[in-house]
Length: 108
Image (cartoon, rainbow, N blue to C red; front, side, top):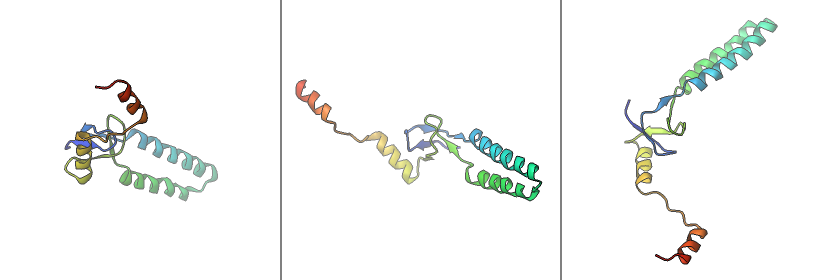
């Protein structure tokens, strides 16, 4: 897997898979709907967690940044990747009023 850059924190490296959280969501859905189906005897309702699992596997089969755990890891050669690299090289400077007070009290 190619190195990617996180647009949130600027970390460059290989992303990690987001699997543990996905498993817990699927297990919760299966447990809740499965219990309801067993209690009421309405077995066709088990199609809901099956559909959810298929949707979840295809939609949320993503990776995340190992540093900040954000899902915003993009290819370094993409438009967003180039913007993140540029932002790392030239960070946005924010002027604050207390910086101006410190500069006037301590010149040089």
